[in-house]
Figure (cartoon, rainbow over the protein chains, first blue to last red):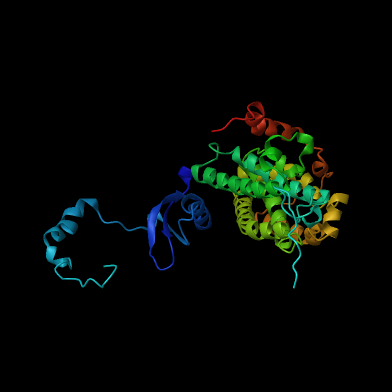
Length: 94
Length: 269
């Protein structure tokens, strides 16, 4: 039965102000039940205050075969990381 | 001003006479009975739903049913704890002393029958709890305030599944109709007002279920209409659970639930 149901990706916002984060997926016959299943599967220990479900088929993913051309060039660009600044001690949460 | 000599209080005495003792008064029997009715409903329905654990039609539904079961067990813990010694009441009481309605002890059957039972019970429970928040008894009012949210979710979940199964395939429609047909004759008991309940209504601890019967009927009718299902034909109502006249099913349920603590009373783990 569940193999006939589409897959949905589940995103949970753990508290106000934070972004929704991907936590896993559920099978469900439609959007309302996907939310129900996501609620019952991923927020039963007070993990969240908001849920998103997205049909997995709607996710556009990068091609793993292109991983080299897409991501490797960034490896040698260490200057893109803002790590060459002295951060004053009073500045928190950086 | 001359002061009075100190009173010579014997060692170990509290200094308060029996007439000063704060309200450790025994609860009125109608009050305890009402706690048992609601507590046993929750306990028995929780145990029934727990039987699905590991047997759900799909993994997500299995988790869903287990969550519903845990909510019910949580409610039972509070209600039976208020009625007396909760564990003693749950695990060392005989079937004739249980005060749950007959609907909740009905067997799970297939998933559709479980959903039919849950729709019919939690719709009633939700309407009841909304009114129980106004109870003159502080515990019951606070309990209702806490439980009404989770029961709203139960009611909604059962309605969503009823609609999907009723308005689904030929097989799911048939199963949903059969599940409702099985449960239908146990609905009138939910609205029965006997002397004990009347005493609770009169002193303001319990809402009169007659006050929301109309709303219940139309809420169920609305779900069935959306599910493209006909309401089952009216059947001869079966009553008696509130007075301890239970179906054979409850004995089997209790045998499974009570076996361990009754066979090994001091077992710990």
